[in-house]
Length: 143
Image (cartoon, rainbow, N blue to C red; front, top):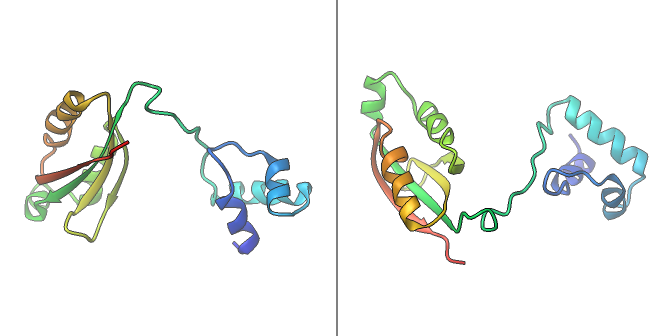
């Protein structure tokens, strides 16, 4: 992957490729843009496309980041890893993103909810129900 490819992938917007607009934006021939994007797809650098959802319009007015502390010894005794726990958490439909981190928290999740009552249900019924989680801290996004 070269600088041209990097420019292509950083300019793909919301999972919709508008080849003409992209070619104009990066000042490249349309045929070259089309060919290179197809190559990036073939090489699995571009894995998939997804549309961007306006969650607020869909009724999910709360966005929160949940910092999670994990009991590594408990996970080991259950023959599980942080990766496995994160995959389980990403399976919760309200969890939009999740990462293993090197900060004060072991994991961080981006969660959407209809309101704070719904968020409380997600936190207590879905997230805290996973074995290995010992503590969470929540940051609600304002606005």
